[in-house]
Length: 277
Image 1 (cartoon, rainbow, N blue to C red):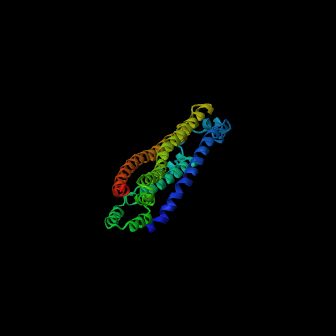
Image 2 (image 1 turned 135 degrees about the horizontal axis):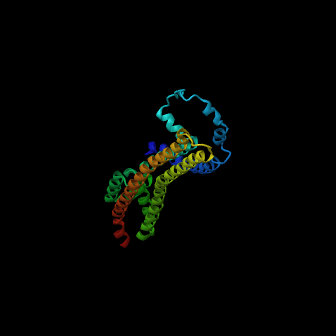
Image 3 (image 1 turned 90 degrees about the horizontal axis):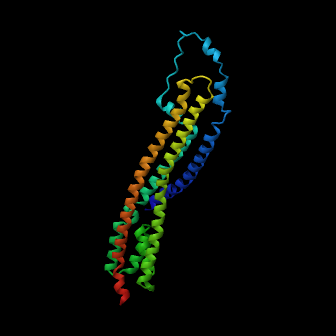
């Protein structure tokens, strides 16, 4: 358990910072999408300055110079753009961080370890109540915290003990649900960023059509259309696994918490008869 404390603490601090960076990047994207399509856009200004006479003066039989071949990855990144590449990188980093964090938090050994339940029950069978309490208190698992809280209140009555266990359970479940909700947040934000890129790219393409005096070339429209399609693709690629992971982890959390309640009640139920006596 001590070997896992350092990486779990590091991972636990990463998603919050990454999430803040992701939200700031999304706001920057919205502002950038609005300012980039002003009438004084540099791309449009350059397009207007190109004299139409040069195209007319060019020989009709002159072959166009072959363009340098570009790798698919570079074309993908160029179509995505710097702003959306940074935004999706932050979302991807956040998704991986919260995914690892939830995988560590939702392990069976971290919630309802079988070894703790067996050792605790063995101490109770031998009437070693102090040893059982020390064992539960020294364990960092969900079950250990509940048992330690319950046994610390046994002198005030069994009802007080069960109330203390219920409070600990509510607090820990709330923490687990908050961590789990970060995955759902990534699954919700990713397609919205992709949709923003889609609108951004289509506006850029229609701007070229509106500002050009003649029929625009297909290559002039390809940049905006590529941005629209690539951002949508990347947003869905992030959103789909995030949604699946959120559903799977939520079901696992429900299953483990239900098993935890049954195990804790079984271990503490023998103190009910003692308290009545």
